[in-house]
Image 1 (spheres, protein in one colour):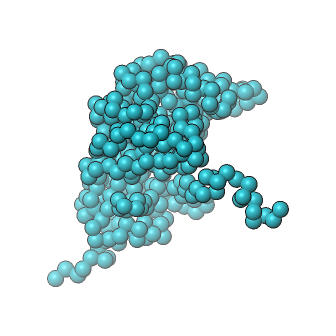
Image 2 (spheres, rainbow, N blue to C red):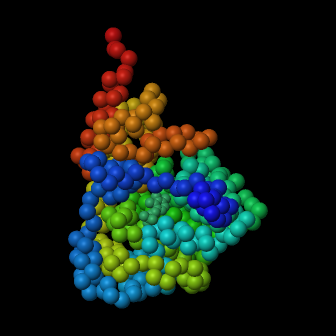
Image 3 (cartoon, protein in one colour):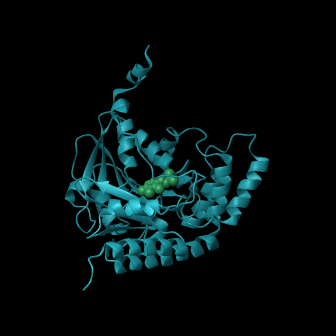
Length: 362
Ligand SMILES: *Cc1c(COP(=O)(O)O)cnc(C)c1O
């Protein structure tokens, strides 16, 4: 069989799909990375110590399939019961498990637009359709998000949303859930930087699920750990779909220690929020239109200067931000909250590009 026809061995929908492309992760060179919303600070030292200890003592055996130690710790922090929690290899794993469990071939998955592009990929792998519903101007969702849909099986709502950093208040999310003819997964990857969360909705409506991650607000993107909060009957079904050992021993140990370290969390959060204000203010002073953010990134555009060009120039100067272009909606820059020094470096470069290109003042 000629090599170039290996593609034909694959399912039709896999052949057709475009791969999901995550933000650049340069492996060499010195970049200031403000493009994938990682935490700019190292994780809790307690987490690092727990990982080291687990490496020395627990690698020879398979890990706990249910990550019980983490569920007990997280349940205490969140004020829920451990059997309302399902753990995953990053929250992307959680999204995959939920999609595989609810959405089959020919079914439909509903998403807001613009939002997290990975959701489309999850639908495509299932050979399912996705229905994208535009946010309105002030990032609210209208009646079409909750309308009946043919073979509609699941809806995703990132809250706070990416790339906008905006949130729908919990009572609005509950209203959406009550009207939707299918379960709703609220993706709370960024909620630790926001004012409110939707965990309480899970108790009020068992068709609401909430996903969380330790990648952003705990500084553990490299560890891969996320979890889902849902009614125990839903968790029990989802356990049938997940890989038996989807969380490794090091991740379970590190995540358990990390979520238990409330002091690290509170200090880190306060610092990230302070720098987010510094970034938003600095961009506004440079003439950017800045969407008020409740996440650890800021979405902005400049009326006089194309976003793609700013992205390219920053990259040439070794600062990576995310340029995003959503057909039918528009483009802009999503800038992650780094350290104060990183943000100052980014703002001062942007300032130099803008002043250099400004029409001469006379
Ligand atoms: C980063 C992100 C995730 C994935 O987080 P991981 O736990 O690292 O897999 C999920 N949803 C949204 C909207 C994100 O931005």
